[in-house]
Amino acid sequence: MKKTIILLTLAAIFVLVACGSNSVNNAIESYDLSEYRKQGSGLLFSNLATVRSQNTVRNVLLNAGADRAAVDDVFAWVNIFNALADDDGLLYGTFTQTDSNYVVYDMEVEWQENDVLDYDVNCHAVAFHLLRSFITVDNPVIEDISNAGSGAMMPLQIHSNVEWSQEERNGFISVFDLLFGITESEEETADAIIMAWAERGVTFGESKLSLVSVWSGSWVIHSAVLVELDEGLLLFEKTNPLMPFQASIFNNAAEVREYMVDQMYSYGLSDAMIVVMRNDVML
Image 1 (cartoon, rainbow, N blue to C red):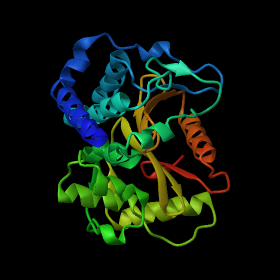
Image 2 (spheres, rainbow, N blue to C red):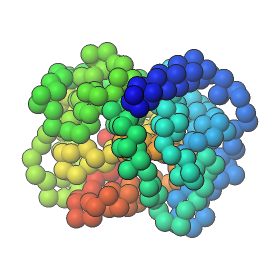
Image 3 (cartoon, one colour):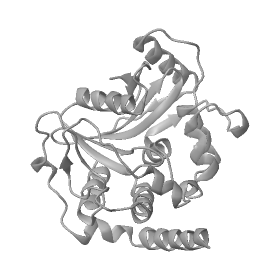
């Protein structure tokens, strides 16, 4: 019975958000991001838990050239998560600066207890959905769920709201599901990623939007969308399949790399060799 109620709630939220998504863009004045600059080393971020913060990030993505329909889809996912997550001070609507370089969220247990994990979406699907029109794959691998080696494949198996053509699904796999030998350095890993993409004909178009992907060997462990602002950068991501969406502001790409590495270390990967790519260039 509980699961039935949750499913009905999900459906209602998705319809309302999807049908009314354009109104969010015009509902309320957005933040002027020039007012928000990092002070010191703490992370400046928002979980998009208010209309105003959503409006701000929507405008940033759209002004950078993101497809409006894709942006609408992603913000429908944002609102589904935010409606089901426990919002007892755990979600940040306004842009807030922390003392540390990353955010520790404490909602995993409740999210699992709500029995809605199957309806969540992960970071790779969110990033690819927003960047599909800027990524070309001329020699794609063909989808084969049974042989998939990467956790990036999960949204194609369980998230019913990811609606891609077979060509797009093959493109997703070609970008994120790589296989190459053991590498001994960050530079060697980056070269192997670039070579694997080249073999599949993966290219990234010129844009203010770029794919940030984080790798440990041939395993992609995180993805996000990076947007060039007039001053600085905005990073948009699903922080974790069990954690909120997040938009963060950085002064430069070096800060983005530091944040990504520190975030991965906070997940217990301190012994791993972490490689952060911005499109096909190592940060």
